Image (cartoon, rainbow, N blue to C red; front, side, top):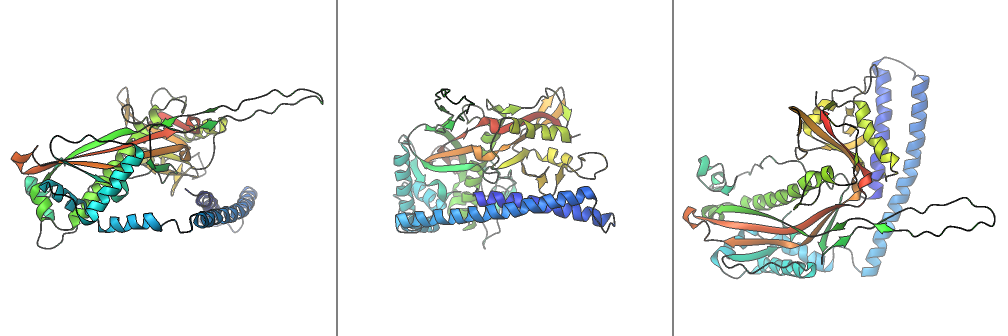
Length: 434
């Protein structure tokens, strides 16, 4: 997320607070604000003016950064090789590539170009795949992608038959967990090469008070931090031959979307609760601040702001602060008051105590002596990095499921997740939705 966008979000939060004060006075049919309300409005107005200046400066800086980049390269960022890649992407068909692989024929046209781009990406990333003893391996750049068996007639056609029609059908997407990582401010690093990628975090220098002729103590600023290491992620999907050969063009979009969502949900899930061999998630990451709770407890305002205090106590950054929670905990917090008498709720609109939040079913539900408990995570998500190496490998095997007239497609890719500064996050794993 650009700095100017983050500043605009904070300014919007202030405007909503101002609007809430005005509406509260209108609901109580008061012509004037109370002394406390007027003081808060004056402070909000002053803060908004400050943000306006910061936003103007940030936008000017970002504009100049872009101009410098274009001047150095002599072309816009989307020209040249990137533009050519985008043109191939527009013409590329994943289903056509799979049909060609199924026949054992050489790829042609846009599919051949896509394969060449993917092979080069793997070569640059130093990612290697063994030559399969059976079947055919094809490669697709990850940017081209972004039931257990897809058949035409099985289970009344629900797995694929509804896609085979005289006219192109409207494909209805399966229910999927919402994607949230990049929305919260995490950085996706694509096209990585080689092995470990260090994420250095420097320690602060400590100043000291001295007499006029006192000697300064020398310091070494140590750089420490985690590394991104390529970890393999894979999936196996069975696709019926009849679907591949006869289905409408909507299948192309369906296959791309489902592959994209499958990969992204895998990354999102690992970011929350991953454990080896997957990347380590926030709920298992060493160094993340932990609330005092050790058993089930009601989710109230004090326990919400406890996490904020843990972050501020560690002098963590404030670039993309927000909350992550389960939908059931979200529903509970929308009905919980901050205190008695104010009429204000912990979640109002799109903010949780004034901060953005994301609710997702990927957050696991725990159990404490028979009571369901819901983790709540708070932190600066700009400290989270997702790394991706090379292209996506598709190994098409037409023989493994020939008795069911299907082909098996095995998908492999390499990625990892790292938290540059774990103390920028805090969690409470024992909140109930009561």
